[in-house]
Amino acid sequence: MSLPICTYGDPALREKAVAVKVVDDAIRALAEEMLATMHWERGLGLAAEQVGRTERMCVIDIPAESDLNENEERDNPDVEMPLVLVNPRITGHTDDVQTGQEGCLSFPDIFANVERWHEVDVEYTDLNGEVKTVHGKGLLARALQHELDHLDAILLVDRMSHVKKVAVSGKLKRLAKKTKAAL
Image (tube, one colour):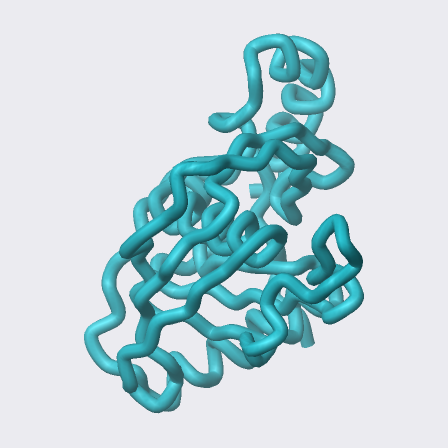
């Protein structure tokens, strides 16, 4: 069974995540539910805030066929998917940036070009309680940054250009109204 996704206008999306003190069975169960929800919704990533939770954790699953650079080579062949990141934080990044289109399960049918670092290093705790580091390039780097934004209460709309916000303002207003009516 999948968890309900919080959409734009839900105050849960503006809650900053709280560090997980212990990786226990409850955290592992939440991770499993989040992965199932993300797959059900056909997303690439999902943060706890998007399902109304405040734990500092997210899940990411980039299919191999989506992990290709402009030369049709895998960007992250050594990164095992799916990733479950507890208490993730960016520890390094390249200076070069990439602009690419992003969507978000909390903003259905809304897409925007967002500038992100091309490569990032993220330190996190895995489901065994071990501290690990992942180096992501391309789409994985973008997904890591997007999900960590959620954990810091930064939303897709906050990364949109002013022109894009104006262009989708009607959709955003309708989505917020629908979300508030459902709460």
